[in-house]
Length: 323
Image (tube, rainbow, N blue to C red; front, side, top):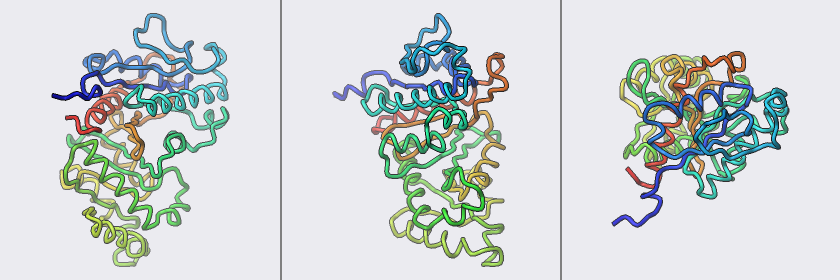
């Protein structure tokens, strides 16, 4: 008999509402009305009270100081409140009051203006949880080509000129290890197959177009294989993603942001999910931004938020071995 109370109660998902000037609140409310979502878990919204419509049935964890809708049009105020919602969500997750955190989009300029000095969600979540390593995984369990595509960005929001110095053998080993363990623990894949995307065209063609493959990547592959992680590569960027979608790999390690995001959003835009690896709880987010230019018009597509919520529920159900 299973006596673990976590296995008998419903999953609890916290959703931070993001920048109140953007589409985060709208896509959240629409997603919660999506067929099947309401019955799948309990939900706790986290944000300022003034952006929640009257009659909404979900409980609200209020942040801020009672700002009115008008006051929340200020970028600095909106950014401050958005950061407070993330902070509160992490606190609730660490206390076991929610099982996973879904975060609606923030505006990075407003976020900084509001006093939060982090490049984005991922770095803030790492700081708040004291996580040794975190990874930014873009996951689409369904794509335009049908099969899943999962892409871990080994380096994230960096200028391209800064990537070669940041992409070290040690970084690739740590990021791949995070991904391998997450695929086993959260996706229940016993023996994950992971590919390393090359840095240079044609994987440098034996040194004709750079040396990162031989100098940085191959040592990482060898170290990981010695540790029991069967990483394959480096494989040229123009073939590795298609090979993954064809089922050869469960995930791909991309050396820098756009080489991973360009193919990912081509086949999964609107249905992709940002998953933070390395945290003590699952965190997911839609793959789009705040779209402030269309906020308040009622036309925002909630598809990616629906996917983010559904994946958070799925990962939460598996994180402790529950199937």
